Length: 253
Ligand code: URA
Image (cartoon, rainbow, N blue to C red; front, side, top):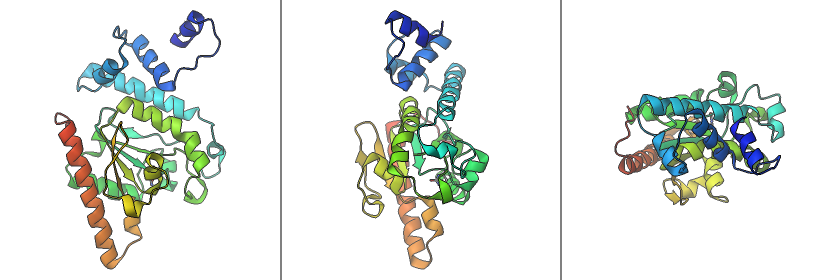
């Protein structure tokens, strides 16, 4: 009997309305014979840098991907623009998470976030900050490429939110960098990226630093280009500094 069946049996019900993150946490407990039943303690135990925690993180990641791959909550999964879902990638124990808008052509082709031109810029910024890309977690608000790379619609963002929430519920980051207007509005709706970039948002759970999307750099020239680059550089520095302050033991290189 699997863990969900056991719970159904216990409560004599066919449907269990537990959040996905809780179901997954119970799967983890079951799989690794974890006796502790305090969710916070279990989440903390997967953060340490040892082989056992790494195995737990790999298991959770495979389950997060399974959850994502079965998603049919909005029509994008069947859109012609989309060939595969793009999960986040990186360290599931990182205090710092970077969130973009959604996969573009290259990401859809490779099944990985930020691997096209915007991704190259992102990787360069991280390297300049002496951060290895694999040591942070990089993901998107939506996981399926929209037609012609258009901005995701509100109903698509809402339908997809269970995927991002599941990722965040296990990573429990301290700091999030919101790359552009879409992730900014995910956390603070009705916001302008021009006005909000560089200003901290405290969601209660996370410190969020909104900044311009790296692809915005590609559309600038002359003085504007320098201004945008400088703004992004400052915002990344603030975010990294806070993440290091809040989790001094975590290694980014
Ligand atoms: N732009 C995004 O917002 N996300 C990606 O993964 C790539 C480009």
